[in-house]
Length: 248
Ligand code: BJW
Ligand code: ZN
Image 1 (cartoon, rainbow, N blue to C red):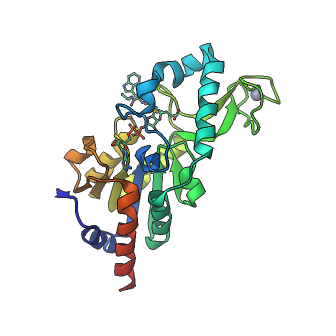
Image 2 (image 1 turned 90 degrees about the horizontal axis):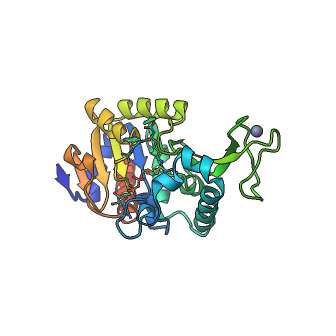
C-alpha cells in the first residue's frame, strides 16, 4: 500500500482511469464545522445515544425529542458552508467518462457545493415524509409535524438503524462501485453496513482503492493507497495535479 502519496502520484492513477466512484462520510463535512458521529469527544454519538434518536422505535415513542434533535442539527448545518473538499469533488465530475459520488451524509453540503452525479444512501435532512401515506411535507412548523393530506406523523427522510436503504440508490451505488476503476473512500469510519461493503465490492472487481482519512479504518487493510490527512487539505491539491495531467 502507498502511504501518504504525493498528489502527483495519485494523479497519475486518475489520468489512466475513466470510471471513478467516491464514497463519502461525515469526515468530509468536518472542516465545514458539522460534527462527525464517532469521534470520541466531538462526535454526535459521544453526546447522544443512537438508540434514543436514530431508530424508528425511538421516533414512535418520542417523536418530539427526535424532531427537536433534527431541527437543532438542521439549523446548525444551515450555518455552515461547503469546504474545499466538497468543491474539489465537484471539479472532478466532468473529467471522467463515469464519475459517481456516493454519500452517506444527510447534510446536503455536496448538493450545495454543486455535485450533480450524486447518490444519497442515507437520505437528506432537508426532506420529510408522512409515515402513513408517504407524501413529502415541505414546511415544518409545529413539532412533531403532521401530514397535510392524512394527518399522519411526518418523519425526517433519513435512514435509521435497522431500516433498509433506498433500494434504487443502493442498487445504483453497488453497480457504480463494481464498475469503477478507482474507488475513493473519504471521511468515513466504514463501520456502518451496507455502505461499508461498497469499497470491498470495488476492490474485488479490480478497482484501485484510495482512502483519505486522518485515521485508519477497516478499508485501510486492503486499500492500494491511504492519505492520512484531511480531505479539505488534500483533495484540492489532487485536483490541481489531475487537471495538469489531463491538460498535458
Ligand atoms: C475525516 C476528517 C477530515 C474526520 N477529512 N476524514 C446490530 C443490530 C441492528 C443493526 C445492525 C447490527 N449490526 C449491524 C447492523 C446494521 C447496521 C450497522 O451497520 N450498524 C453498525 C454501526 C454495527 N446498519 C443498518 O442498520 C443499516 N440498515 C441495514 O443494515 O438494513 C438491513 C437491516 C434491517 C434490519 C435489521 C438489521 C439490518 C442502516 C444504517 C443507517 C445509518 N444511519 C446513520 C444516521 C443517519 C441519520 C442522521 O444523521 O441522523 O447514518 S448512523 C451514522 O453513521 C450516519 C452516517 O451516515 C453513518 C456512517 O458514519 P460516517 O459517515 O462514517 O461517520 P463517522 O463519524 O463514523 O466517521 C467519520 C470519519 O471521518 C472518521 O473515520 C474520521 O477519522 C474521519 N474524519 N475528520 C477526512 N477532515
Ligand atoms: Zn400522510
